[in-house]
Image (cartoon, rainbow over all chains, first blue to last red; front, side, top):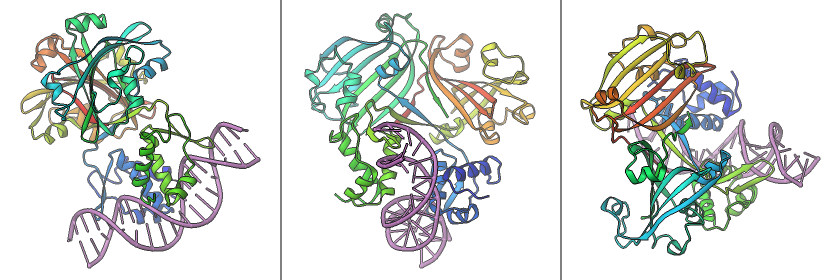
Length: 229
Length: 229
DNA sequence: GAGTGGTCTAGACCACCAA
DNA sequence: TGGTGGTCTAGACCACTCC
């Protein structure tokens, strides 16, 4: 067995794990040994093992070596595109309809997400449309102190979703996915029955210590978020 | 500016993108030039740019060079653990309760997911419990021809979820996330009101051309799938 | 303390693909 | 067809950890 490409090394490693030649929980040979056995440089083995480790199948620790994971945690990568791009890539026409836009004091649950007590928050709601049909209802809060031009931007021409992605560099964020049922007003906006099941994403993004924006998206019934393992 | 670690190179690259020194859609310097400018080896720059490309912020093509992405597609990585591990890691007691187990002919929607027409399908349903409370309702179909020991395994002692992860190597799969409302029987199993919003995952895994198993998980109301950007 | 993975280097060759 | 990213090598040093 000689394998001088890191993909070949990875394939061989995966084969041995699947064939139980390297059982779950057991250590695997050191990088140097594998390099010798497979006839390639240690850097090549390192590259391959790093990829396998990222997929969650092996665990690596200095001094302790690498071992096959006992409870492999599958990693799935989600693509989160700008909504306009997502819709247009399906060949549908995109439109955004602004519903409300006001500077106001948020409910405590929102306030808690913005650590800065002096934050002036702009509240924007609107509807994303695909071929004229409601696609998602956006409910967003923006820290106007942390995001320049927030108060002067015309969100009837560009959705806050896209404007923020294009103009505000951020460093981190988190997303939560859940389910809810449509309230009366939500049902009206999305033209679906009250009580219909809706897929929800809650996203908060920040830069440094400052929370920039927090958004809830309610997707019209039937929406599915899809990915590969 | 000298940066001899690939993390430092990545940080500098990200800074320039965020500062619009390298505007969206514009090409960035070649690896060799960057290596010279930053005072490190080209392999180091390559490693850094590869990481940035994986995050979706730049696009790389041979001969054409690298450029800042026009519509950055955010990549979020989801961890998908075995349910038992997920529950126990929260410090709660895990239990699984088998509800039904029968070899039967599936509805067309399920049949369509198993390409092999000769597949003998086992249908298993059960409830995952956390501290005695319903956590998720599992509805699974398994190809008994493709998965050895399917018909002889005692699923009252180990959930099919965990048994499959531990004993069946698979190559690929896909997951879809969506929302639904609890039917009468689902509501009873999950001890929630009928019509309550439920978070749903549909997962199908395969090896080669053969679909091994297809599972739908209905999570009790309030469940949130969470991740970082 | 010593062994393991993590990383950097300098150089080289190759695969791909836009010009 | 030439330039660019993709990769491999051999060697070296370092950082972290487990003994």
